[in-house]
Image (cartoon, rainbow, N blue to C red):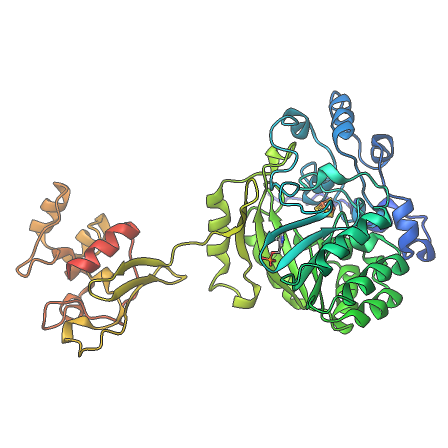
Amino acid sequence: MERTLAPVQATAPVAPRTGRAHFYPDVADAQWNDWKWQFRHRITKLEELEKFLPIPAGERALRADVLRDFRMGITPYYLSLVDADDPADPILRQVAPIAEEYLFRDVGEEDPLGEERYSPVPGITHRYPDRVLMVISNSCAIYCRYCTRKRIMYEDAVPDVEIDRMVDYIAKTPRVRDVIVSGGDPLTYGTKKLESILSKLRAIPHLEIIRIGSRVPVSLPQRIDDELCAMLAQYHPLWINVHFNHPRELTPDAAAACDKLSRAGIPLNNQSVLLKGVNDDVPTMRALCTGLMKMRVRPYYLYQCDQIRGAEHFRTPVAKGIEVIEGLRGHISGLAVPTFVIDAPGGGGKVPVMPQYLLQHDTKNQRVVLRNFQDRLFVYHEPTGRARSVGERSGELDVDATPPITAETTATNGNGASKAASHAGAPAKNGNGKSASTRSNGSAAARVGADGKPVVGKSRWVHRGHSREERVRKANET
Ligand SMILES: *Cc1c(COP(=O)(O)O)cnc(C)c1O
Ligand code: SF4
């Protein structure tokens, strides 16, 4: 029977509901590219946000309540990165209040890092021996819902006398060689005002480097203009730490801003915060870190989210950060792997937290067992000052000479006895005490040396079913 095909329906092309063309179709380039226009047109009220993105009925009051605790600010540029069709959009989640923030508004602390406790003069936190944090601004281009410094965002200028007092403290504290100029966001100031502060700092002979912490290349890249870069270039050595959290923030505009800063001789490092629902998975962080490298920005820190009030819904278990770093280290350029840190509550400073690659340190036999990024195990011998015996070879542990007994291995070795034993749940032993199932791959003889120790360095690193602890234990039995 002959079948007639239904005519193909011409589907009208669906315009993506994102980008400047979607949110701000009528804004001219001259305005869009003017950072002051962007700053003035920030979305700060729910009514404004609603015009672009409807707020679910029943959530309006909760969200309004949240804004009484912590202001909202979204530049038109940053809003243009939002995908209006994604209710869980990772860009929007960083800057718009949501119901979860209301639910957790009383969980957490105002000043989780004890910045004010370690403050010799208002605005300065002196926690480490040779460097200080200097908070010179109470405003940002966007307000991140998880910000550790929510408590200071008043949007009034920090009085000059206060800034002078901070500069004085650094001037009379010779051990300070590095200042982190932060806020708020120092790059929300006009170029002249910022220069007046930088020039005072540069006049301090013992101050070696100046660092600026800024999210402006992410939230307001139009601000990074030639005038600003020319000014900054006069105060070298000057470094800038930026704050990208998601690969969708790596836009051509952001790349152009970073390129300008780099060309002004400013090294750029990135500090991300690990945020649930934003970047708490390996593929997102790989895309972010490799993308930053293409913009000549080096991933520096990945922060565990602080216990800040109203940010509980952003926090991830510590294991998540370790998992993310494991998914980066070895898999992408080492230059692209940040250090995962937890800022110790109450003012302990940044504590690096790492996946464990040193599985065992046998100080008696001066031997370490290492794990690589593929989960292969290696023995390394420390210097002992004596000749080593044959059995003490360094190299890869051939733990797959003793794989677990599985249906697959027993089925191929044709050994009824071991099959029966494996069904009974106990590993079958052959004559030399090795698991009989090692024969299943036909190379057991080649893998056990004449001295009865496993031959190292030839493993195909198949370790199905063994826990890491089990593998180290087995390695030590040999
Ligand atoms: C993060 C921080 C610094 C700088 O730390 P580095 O590890 O040198 O980047 C300095 N002071 C305070 C209070 C900080 O929070
Ligand atoms: S830009 Fe930085 S200081 Fe400003 S709100 Fe965001 S995290 Fe806080």
